[in-house]
Image (cartoon, rainbow, N blue to C red; front, side):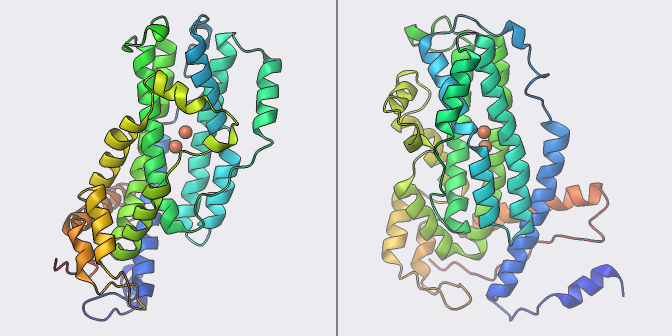
Length: 353
Ligand SMILES: [Fe+2]
Ligand SMILES: [Fe+2]
């Protein structure tokens, strides 16, 4: 018996039609592990930059506006809570190797972001090391707490949060490229900052992509629970660590500099994220939740068809299949596919709405 057939023989036999909870959980975990391994490879081969050596820090702008410096300070503040983010998210997902090991790798990438923004302040020469250490000391008196205590809600939260973070950095890049229409930022052109913001935004895009794949997996196998979680997370969403700064001006600075505001959140974050999860609109999501009874059977399968009015379930299936196909291509390339294959298994759920 080959390892492949042995693995197949060990697979729980699912009944025809809908999958059992155990089988769905197994498929999600296999998928997560495959996506994590693909992500690991991409991280090492395509995004392996260094916060000290990859930038010409000596050429960093020394006369940036007070507004731009405040933005850098706060970007550093958010990123430097990485030990809190990583420890809590790893603990929350510890039963899943794919997800928890990802959080460790993700944490290493976020630590680079923290170093990058620290360096930007240091090389600006507008903040002394004494000021920086006091700032850091004060920040570390606070502890970030999980906004949700389950993996499903947190999967939705991080999709929105990573997309918003990517957008913040892309908008900073525009300022540094001289594309801002705000007079106060007219002298903030800086090629080193353009590169820094671009590199970091690229990481955030990769984080967003990973979490989107995970959210799609959940949405495919547990559509009712996932839609409900998404609905709740959207309703209460706030960016991480904002409430910890004791900084009433933070939101105002972001808005005033054109980096982030309610319009950007709705148009460039929420609408993009929910569209990529095949949800028709926020309104459709709300209606679908309201109209359905959302009472899953013991295997987590939903009996009420009205949830399918709010999103394109077939499209979610295609997204998951494409993701698994990408993982398979990578697994074949590095030679692990024959020994440890990750395959796509249809959920058996047939949307009837
Ligand atoms: Fe980051
Ligand atoms: Fe991130």
